[in-house]
Image 1 (cartoon, helix red, strand yellow):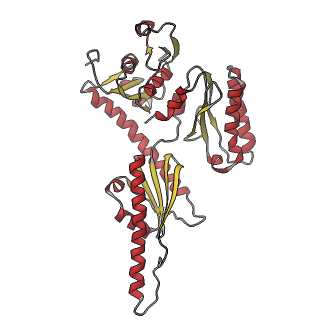
Image 2 (cartoon, helix red, strand yellow):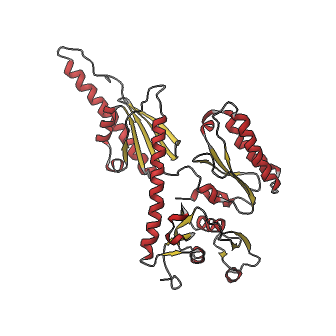
Image 3 (cartoon, helix red, strand yellow):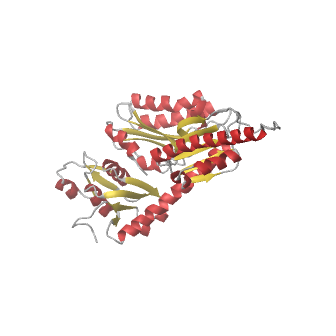
Length: 376
């Protein structure tokens, strides 16, 4: 996962409030239920010493769900608020959080957010008819970041039984127009796939329109194209099956990424380009060697690491920090220190189930390069 979206978090001053809250809004009493959950989170933050401006920023942003609209369709939401009251992260969770969180601390609690985050798998959804298509680009499952309609010329769009000498002309004109429209949609989708590095394109809608789109699709689109039955552009058409299929495909891609990360660690190990275990990964992070950090979703029991003012100033013991010229290092939970360093060195991060980790280790890394101190 590209975690560059977390960079603004560390550009803001700490301490930080990290909140994961259930904002499900599907019952008659949803407004009151959300208010109670938000109040509980705010009381926890206040009890931990968060200033009122931070607590109020959390309260006002989360209660927006009671205003309706798209926000009312969400089930879980994650916020990080900086010490000056600025909201530096506002993300959708895949579902109501399994573990509601309200934490006020010098370092943000990112692992609970990442392991509950809605799938950050770039994808394109196309709902086509013979006029054009509704096209959406999403980096969060079911929540488009960009939407557009691509429509062609509707003149002679229907094949009609006119009879006589003109019949074949009408038929030919309609078919040509459908093909032109499909070509416009395919060109737009090709641009989006390349721009967003989409992992899949989900195609729904009219059967003939889907066939024409498939014929016009470039190789880049065809390689990631998934077609499904049903769906339509007409007003009132049920989009839920399309959204559900997109969620399923995101989950499949995430599972593939997790298994792929473990395989990459194992393959890189054969060439001396991977390390496992907290101490070795810490050393690699300190030297900005890490290309991809693979972190278990539960590293309970790993204890704390020591960190300095800069992201790559981290170590298992005080001697390591003193070597870096850091006195008075701060003790923080291991996951927070590891993720801070990964983000600070532009490393990718993949969170996987603890049981899937190689050797049941809590953390591993694929390296960009090795040096004389890298274990062989």
